[in-house]
Amino acid sequence: MSRCNIFIESAINGGRRCAACKHLKKRCTEDCAWAPYFPHSQPYRFSCAHKIFGASNVERMLKKLPAHLRAQAADSIVSEAYWRVQDPVYGATAIITYLQQQIQKAHNEILQAQAQIAIYKAQEELLNQLARPNIDEARYASEDSSLLLPDMTNLPPDFFFLNGS
Image (cartoon, rainbow, N blue to C red):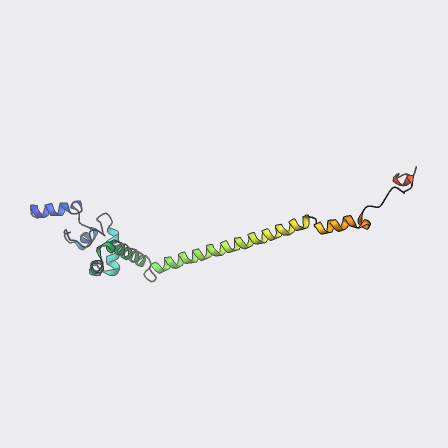
């Protein structure tokens, strides 16, 4: 390797090849399409993407996109590849389905709790209505003399004694 090549390689990625070039056993150049998205410190990112999509397909997909969208696309490719390696049949769909089921379960629990709260509030309101005297019934009782206590002034004097003396 000449001095010129050593200087160029040390200027790129701090002298290290990106994860893609290292995996493919290539020299990392200044215009490497993979270097910004597959840094040398994260080799698993490229290995998953390469295993599922292939290096040339990943490179082609990234080059077709505008520069400002490439980082997000690389993250999506890596994420899909990671889940596809974890679960070859369903990939990311398996975790998405699982999370949707968890959300639905939590939603059902919230609905059950709200229904129980509504029942308890209705019971409490009913008990409060039973405990409070009805104003109309109280007025009726005060106007009706038959509901009042009897007049006890005309009772015989020995009425209140138990032994009769």
